[in-house]
Length: 291
Image (cartoon, rainbow, N blue to C red; front, side):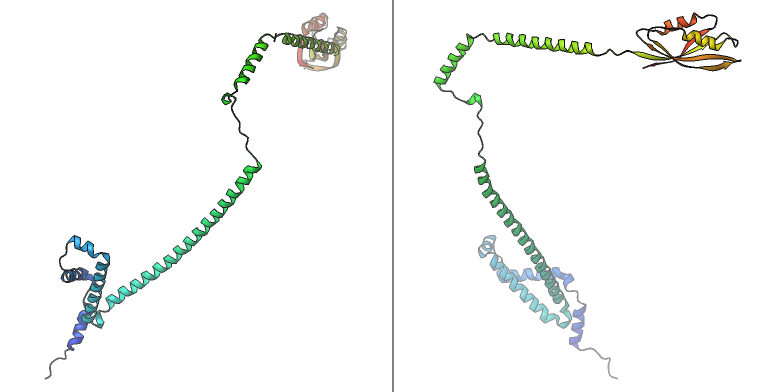
């Protein structure tokens, strides 16, 4: 019987490489790259590396990477080409994003340049206008009197004037002005007193509401009111009146009057009314208001 079918060797290698995790073992390739550099350049000192310069190192690194990529591409076959292609696509994406960012930065720089140019133009216009303004409005320089230096002739003239002023009586004019001011003040006071004397004096008056109570309900209230109104004093004027019931048939007389405060007092008015003892029992002030 024929044996089981086996896949060709090339296909097996391809399948093996498809499942191989190349970039997860990146440290192996870093070691291989380091060993390659050591084999190509050999152990060199720090001074020789500085003499070769950065350009030589970059060129060697680029050459080594190209050799590693070629070796990996030749050994892995079509199944292992996903790693470099993925890095290439990621690199293209990063380059595209960098280009977009570069374009945006260029736009920002252009805007800043325009703003700076506008500010420079405005500043130049202000600088041009400021000298003209200063020319039209010259500033006056104020000099303190303490800092002015007087010539010797001026000082001598000032000393002579001071000596002459000492001989002059400075208080004569003040006395004359004081006399004139006193005379004017007295004249105005006299005029004010005359004007005030011509004005009629204000008379202080009060309105009083009196409650006049009889002895009993048999008192003749008409006679009682007549007795009250018979009181006549200088500065007293009687007004309206009415009878107000108190209780048990008794009524009191409530009468209004106006008095001058300087001439008639409430005590005097009560004494005059209470003289009619036959009809009046008492007199009370129900209301008192200044007019």
